[in-house]
Image 1 (cartoon, rainbow, N blue to C red):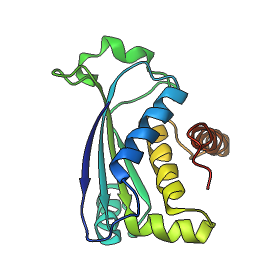
Image 2 (image 1 turned 180 degrees about the vertical axis):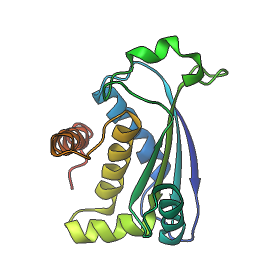
Image 3 (image 1 turned 120 degrees about the horizontal axis):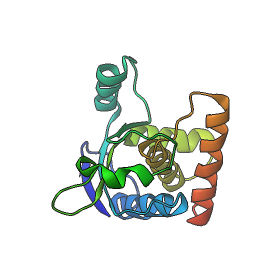
Length: 164
């Protein structure tokens, strides 16, 4: 897996964000049986910047915790089988599946960890897993979809032993 990692803002989370992101992305993709090596872009930013992106891309005028920008369209969530015949889904140099972009607000990670009573590391890992599921075609617009995503997120963090 190739992770293009970028961080902006002076605030730093109290662990190696890039290493944990790799671990969670790989774990999530393994859990949902992605058969490909992938490429993911990750930007850690601040509330003001993610607010601007949320407004520009989703017409929601407030900061959010995570934004996911999938590069692929799925017929069925987590079904990667139809990409093999679509060359433009893969990086021509590395052969990796172009999964998409993740943007996370570091300020939201800290605030939500406190709000939900768990560690900053666990909140960050949860947001990465959540976003990887979005990049893999999962959504939570309908109640049934929400339940499926929440279950998968919990199971992925369980597998990775990131519980608190």
